[in-house]
Image (cartoon, rainbow, N blue to C red; front, side, top):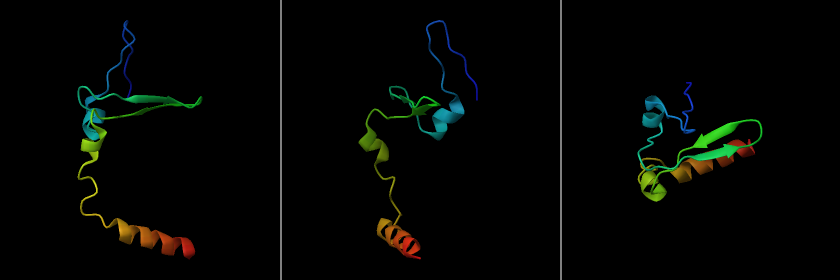
Length: 73
């Protein structure tokens, strides 16, 4: 997707990206420049609340043990 930079040096985050990454008014994206590429990382106003409940239904212990077995093999 392509957006423009305004006279005030602002740009717009497209709706599809805002919805996909749950970016809302007041959130503060972080811009990372590694010299070859620029990455934009969405950071919610309250990051702890944003992640609340995101691990439900996942058995992290089982996933960790499965990865260990895969590493051993």
